[in-house]
Image (cartoon, rainbow, N blue to C red; front, side):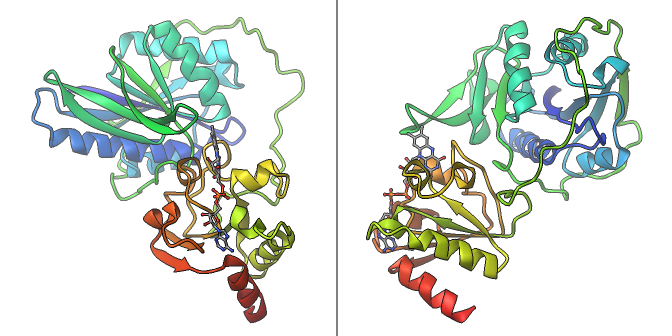
Length: 342
Ligand SMILES: Cc1cc2nc3c(=O)[nH]c(=O)nc-3n(C[C@H](O)[C@H](O)[C@H](O)COP(=O)(O)OP(=O)(O)OC[C@H]3O[C@@H](n4cnc5c(N)ncnc54)[C@H](O)[C@@H]3O)c2cc1C
């Protein structure tokens, strides 16, 4: 029996798990299901979630089981009250040294991006960062993690196999979708507490005051149902007015405004609105593009939207390959018409 471990990220202020934790659990569960279909020995995996913190909220634990966990391991200690990279990575290593696994998925969040390279360096294994796709394949009678990510300035998508176990990958939030129908919330005999035997008391970073939550600004794509995304096509007449018009339309219909990097790089729209590989990853119910061509770096940030409507004047635009509804038209005219309507 193999193991797929998911590094679960908890909010150290309120002890809940972050959304990306559930997304990774669901992906790990889907990998487990797909392994069963591969004709190979040892094609049976358990999905184990590992969290490091002083306390954990039990509703989050139940949700983690619903998203597809087989086992939940809470690595516990007073020293895990606040985040410290050496304390967290060495604590993970203490647990892992007696509980190895074949695959580890980490969230590509600020903390995950600090920990994953440290842990994989200590394990002397590779790490595939910012993956946009994960699947299991058969190679030399073994099941391997095939991790896909953009490469060569994002001109190509590369699928990377790691030579040694554990095969490790980081995944950005919203890359996958959490599914709370995959498991059961029965926690009996599936929730374990692991008390650190050798807590790390020496920390190189000291918390001098306290943690406080980052202020949420207007450009918070979390939980947004509709996003209207502006592309360079709105600037073809070199007049920036349509970016403001699209923002106005978004306000009227209670949607969020987003943009491609090209219009951000031209200073037509500020950076926090950027969606894509080097911007935010989003998965709203509805994503509407206005004059966006569909470059892969944009698409990786929005392809998990539940429905996509693309408006582009070029009927051969790449974005139409990803759209549920395709509108070949002048996006500016559509904005004017919708503003007149709402
Ligand atoms: C390392 C790297 C990271 C990147 N990260 C990102 C990222 O995070 N996000 C991102 O978006 N990009 C990113 N890019 C840039 C990306 O490659 C594209 O250049 C960018 O997405 C293109 O933006 P666009 O679609 O708005 O513009 P264009 O590619 O110029 O497309 C404009 C589209 O508008 C259409 N059009 C023209 N006039 C009209 C009209 N009147 N009505 C309707 N349609 C019209 C055209 O047919 C065209 O398809 C990255 C690139 C690199 C190398």
